[in-house]
Amino acid sequence: MAERPQQARQGDDVQPVPAVIAVVVNGENVLLVQRSKPPDAGCWGFPGVRIEPGETVYEAAVRELEEETGLNAAAERVLTAIDVLDRDAQSVLRHHFVLVAVVCRDPVGTLAAASDALDARWFGLDEIDNPALATSPRVLELAEQAVAG
Image (cartoon, rainbow, N blue to C red; front, side, top):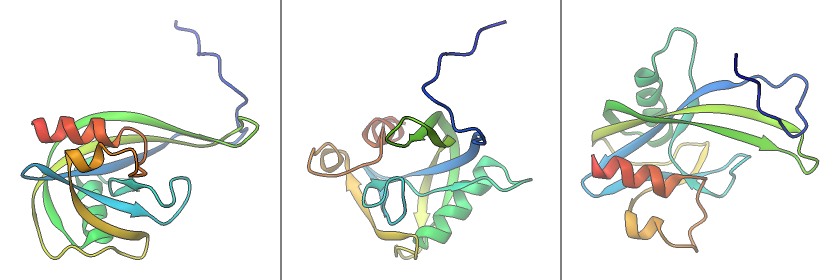
């Protein structure tokens, strides 16, 4: 049996939370929303949400996309899963999200940021690859993979 990796200080009651991010592709562009809430407030990232009991990752991605942006799209495939570990200044774990990245295509509807996003818009890969653009971790990597097919 594999040993657990050594961790920095753990929060006593923190449990991993399953969630999805919708990586929406429209031609050579991807949809990003500007977060209004911590831990990535002000950063651009993919629409994301916790998975509800009984909901598939595809259903959760499509639901959140519509709720957060007003768009509907076809959930195509799982791109990858990533861990997001949020720690305080003393390295105590505050949140642990397991994000399943779901590629969505063929968006329809009128794009509009909902109350939990400051803004929503389409970005080309060259725009995301700009150090002046504050993004959540791995946004460029995931966008490149999704656009590449």
